[in-house]
Image (cartoon, rainbow, N blue to C red):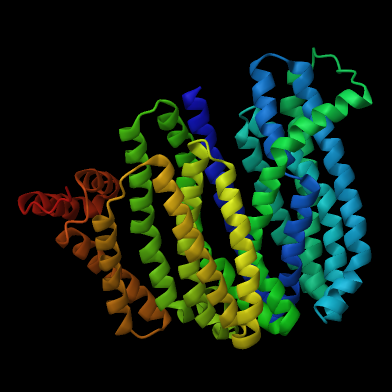
Length: 516
C-alpha cells in the first residue's frame, strides 16, 4: 500500500506540473496574440471559469476519491459504483443551473460591474465550459479512488493540448478574447470525452459482475449528503484559495481598464512559479506528517516539518528574488516588451507568492496532524483581508496596489499559520538557521543591484547570483550534513560537475562548515 500511495503521489505531482505548464503556455500565447487589452478581457473571464467550476463540482471530486477508495477496500462494489453515479448526476445538474445563471447574468456583470461591453460574449462562452468540467472532475475522482492516477495525467494532457490548439485557431480566425474562451471550452469537451472513454475502458470493467444498487430517492439523498458533508470544506477552501489569486484581477476590472487587467495577468502566472515547488513539497508532506503524528513520533514529525520548511526557503526564496530583481527581462522573454509596465507588479507579487508557498506547506502540516479545518478558517479570513486591501490600494495606486495588497495578505497568512503549526505540533523551529538562509539570499540582491536588467543580465546575474548564494550558505555554516549529502547526490548525476562537487564536499568537511 505504501508503494501504491507513493507512486500515486508522484504521478499526481507530474499531473499538476503538466496542468500548470499547459496553463503557462496558453497564457503566453494568448498574451502575444491578443495584446494587453484582449488579454485583459480574457483574464477577466478566468476567475469566473474557476468560480463556476468549483461551485458546480461543489468539492465532490475529492469526496468521490475518498469514498471510492474506502468502499472499494471493503469490497462493497455496489456502493462504490453508486457513489460515482450519484455524485456525477448532482454535479451535472448544478453545472447546468449555474451555466444558465452565468449566461443570463453576463450582460449585467460586463456592463454594470466591469463597465466593459466587450467582455459580454467571452463570459457567455464560459457557460459552455462548466458542464463538461464537472464530468472531467467526476471521472478524475474515480481514477484517484482506484489509484489509477496515470489516467488523470493522460486526461490532463488531452485537455491542455486541446485548449492551446483550439484557442490559437479561434483567436487567429479573428474571434479575439471570445476565441480564447471558446478554445478552453473545446479543450474541456475533449477532456470530458477522453475521461469517459478512459473510465469505460479501465474502470467500468471492475464493476462488470456488480448489480446496480436500487436506492430509493431518500436513500440516494442520504448518500449524497454524506458526500456533500465532506465536500463543503474542500469547496470553501478552493474558493478562498482562488480568491487569494484572483481578487486583484476582479478589483482591477471594476476600477481600471481592460489593458490594466492584461498587464496584471502577465505578471500573475510568472509570480506563481515558486508555488510549483511548494505544491510538490506539500503533496509529499501531507501523508508523511500524518504517519508521524499517528505514531506519536515527535522526533520524526519535527524532522519532516523542519526539513520541508528549510528546503522550501532554500529553493523558493532565491528563485523569487531572481524573478523580482530581473522582472523586466523575464517579462520580455515570456510575454514580450509590450508588457514591461507590469514589471513592478511582478517584483512585488512574486515575493507575496513566496509567502504563500510557506502557507501551503504549513497547511499540509496541519491537515496531516488532524487539523484540516484550521487552514480553511485562516484562508477565509485572509480572503476577506485581501478583498479589503485590494479595494483600498487599487483605487489609490492602480495595479501596483493590487500586488502590494496580495503580498501583505500572504505575509499575514504565513505568520498566522506558522504560529498555529508551532503551537499544535510543539516542534522547535531552528530560527537561527532560517535567518542565516535569509541573510545568504541577500547576496543575490547585492549581485543583482550591479547587473544591467537585460536578458543577458538575467542570464549572467542568475548564474553568478546562485554561485555566490551557495558559497555564502557554505561559509555561514547553513547546510546540515544531510543537506550536503542530498545536494551531492543530485550534482553527482551531472558528470562534468562531479569533480567540483567532490572537492566542495572535502572543503566543507575539512573546515567543518556544517550546521549543527
